[in-house]
Length: 202
Image 1 (tube, rainbow, N blue to C red):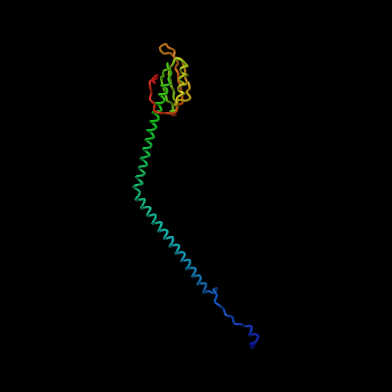
Image 2 (spheres, helix red, strand yellow; image 1 turned 180 degrees about the vertical axis):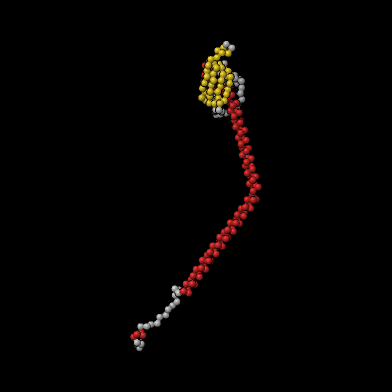
């Protein structure tokens, strides 16, 4: 079948075109803006609700913690008092232990001096200087006896570095004697509770 267009040429070029609605018009823009505003407001409200819930949860936990702290306050105070009392008792026990150690330590020193004292040697004074230094003063008849005393003391557990400070001649009842002063470092090494005995006894 053959069709022939009988319209003039000028009218043939004019074709009718239909325009579809686009979103670039004023109306649709307002709609999209309202949708965006609604979404934003919804997000803000959701965030506020979540934060409010979190704040309430935290406030509840804080209230619970305060309540538990109030309930435990008497026990905590008692524990603090017991801790202070225990520390005080430990301090007193430490002082007592130190006194006991010092007591036995000095007993050991005097026992060593007594048992290691050679014959014909007499002591006139025993002095403690600063807790770690001790001086021993006495009289005898010979420098050899003084040397024996020094050697005997250095063999003990308490005396180290025994030195002769003074050795000078004197007289007692017209007898020539030598007055001496020894100085030594003292140490608590090997300290034990000792029992002194008479020299010469087993």
